[in-house]
Length: 110
Length: 116
Image (cartoon, rainbow over all chains, first blue to last red; front, side):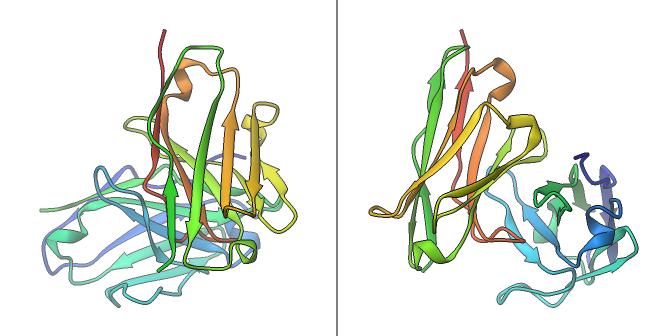
């Protein structure tokens, strides 16, 4: 199972909006509505930000949103804040009942 | 609150095995799957496998098949991940995480260092 494809880095200024893409295949993202997104600050464990493509766990700001079209999922962050600077990973369920992660995207808030 | 508490850091020699524990609290242990995910230094997340604490059924990522074993002890609400035939490339932080299709919450991570 190959890793999902994410851009290595994205950046934005405070208050701006950014989108991170995550591309897979019909065997993972395209086949199921089981895409999730994780935020990881240096030295910390990842934190769930979005599950089932577009659902936010309680406590996650509504500035974070998720979507999917075909084999590509996206995480959008509006009103960027300095504390949003982190690594972001997507994940998907797969046809072999395994899970797969994207390679990760480093978000820099300029 | 829901918590996953992992065992401490390990240093192992190439060819040895390591067993990492993950103790669950704050929820019904047998009602939720537990995943193992690892992260090599400066690298991304790598899914290793999943265990169903209710019955002990497991699914492993193909790259770890034959080297990884996940077990559980329902009397102590603890899951274990054992990785054998260690090599330098297995140096990583190993995380457990609760969930089925997603991962929440995560344990604090266990650093496993493989060094001669």
